[in-house]
Image (cartoon, rainbow, N blue to C red; front, side, top):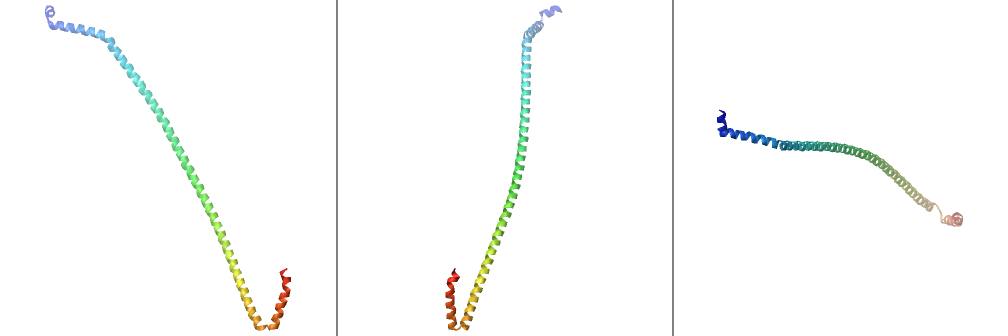
Length: 164
């Protein structure tokens, strides 16, 4: 049986294959281990880099979330300031309107007083004109010509005293 094995080609192919594989494993093992180690190092480096990128992304996210909150707070402050400013403007406009209405009312009162004074003056002037006309008619009807001449002369003589 051993003799048959020694002359069998398949046996020698198997022995050659086992020897080749053993040599290959012995020679290739350090290379394969080195390649696997390098791949493990590269994967670890990529994982570390990914972790670092993730941390940076989280920090940026936190930073931008804080900025967003600050922007929202600023927007709220601006809106509140605008509302306060609008309220102040509304109050100022109301006060200005009230002042304007008071001025217009005072102006209207003054115009009414002027119109009343003018009407009173016109009524007085009309009354004076009417009294003069009535007096003239009475004087013309009741005064004789000599007495009229005496009154005119007397008025002319009193004129210098009345002018001073």
